[in-house]
Image (cartoon, rainbow, N blue to C red; front, top):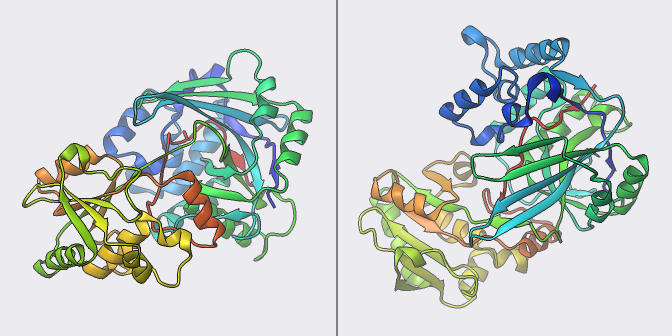
Length: 421
């Protein structure tokens, strides 16, 4: 079961470095070279220098991050919290339908456990990012950014009364999401939150690579096991209730490139054999919520005509996903992977993990632009995966294909760091 505790964080002294907006950053894996340069230009203490490090003169980037962290502590830009705290977090954002919504959660340290022992993944992971994060963790001996996890219980009613006065920090990011953070040092609140979530099983929404990295690091330091209450046996998490009204999942669309003639014909044959095909407009290319499971939009760069693909009955998905749970067989991303990515195109699990001939985007308009620019050969358009379906698949003990979900908004890096020693 979950072990949720306050943490004695390492964090910025905002009196020294200025507003949190100057030093915080989006997650490292969504930052390109242009954005990295812009973030680094905001402040010499921007977290991007730690979380996406670059060694000077081609030196080791991970050791450079560790040296920077030590220097910033000496300069007073980073300070160790004298007492443990929970950090309440709200994120005001615009949903795809134009509504303004607020997602509420909090930052804490959580006891590491093997999958299935209080923590569950919901997507398969890729090997590359885990090695990068492991080397960074070894060098800095801190969790630099939080893992985003979902809880069945709701701790927010216990936190909200403690949010007195102005937030500790506030950031309005490039997507117009307003992030507000409050430090909560009240030990009674800490105990109440820990007790409320003590029997909960956590579901990782985003950050699988970092969680698995934390497990590997803890085993390295702890001699192969996760015993004891040492700092390395905990990991930084942002926890949000599955019942939170501001919890939203966006869609992630698939782009295919470098398709051979055989692969193109394979897609065509699989579509004709198992699906009803209907021409639609570009505005209708993403299936509607009421369409049957396994419905997709499709468009290729040659014809640029959007199509709606609707399964010819449930047998198409049952046959393609035989041996899987009912929840998994009704998952759009799983059906697409089985029927088209693996079946028609011939990609293996390893190909998909390495993004061979495959790319992703959360924007349908962006996918169309890439087709029009011939930067992709074909695109499949998916609906958002409902939160309930994420929970059902995880409860069945299965993990979704990569990029089955896109939880929005993303969490910032640089609010707090979790010491591992």
